[in-house]
Image (cartoon, rainbow, N blue to C red; front, side, top):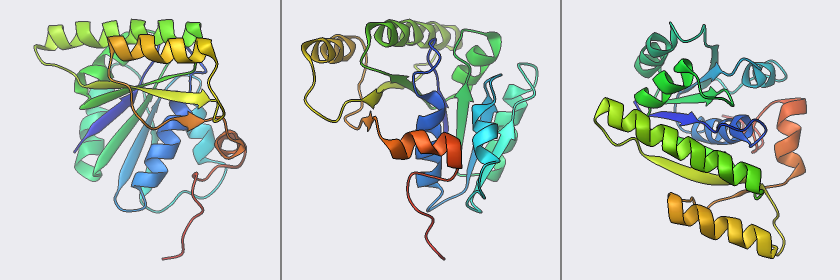
Length: 193
């Protein structure tokens, strides 16, 4: 079953929000296990705010010694495994990236986020070389303006497109996304079965 990690070396770039949005959308059609591997435990906190859809399960990682087994166990239980990683390079992050079928790198439209995305791409490439396989990755712009982009924002987009694959979809700054961390649930209203 596919393993998708959310990674960037910068905190606050939108890893947890991106994981929640993708996880709850996937859960509308299949089983999803989300592993909270960030010491800040924002995903675990989110999961306690409101009832989760029956097809979503959130698991707190017990740390670097256990992450590979946690991923393997989750793959046996669910169609998709999503991992919310911490905002710094660590052995746990390396282990999770090595097990991933895709690493999504959330980035805002600020230079600090872009620098962190580039740093994370380099980390993924190094991990891939060590594992002797290419680890697919893509940059997801998060917390972006839905209005007209400034010259700086356009510049950052162009620069990141030169160094990695950039998703066409963006998670714009929306109250609905911010509210996920206050009220729980997903971006779409729960539909009765």
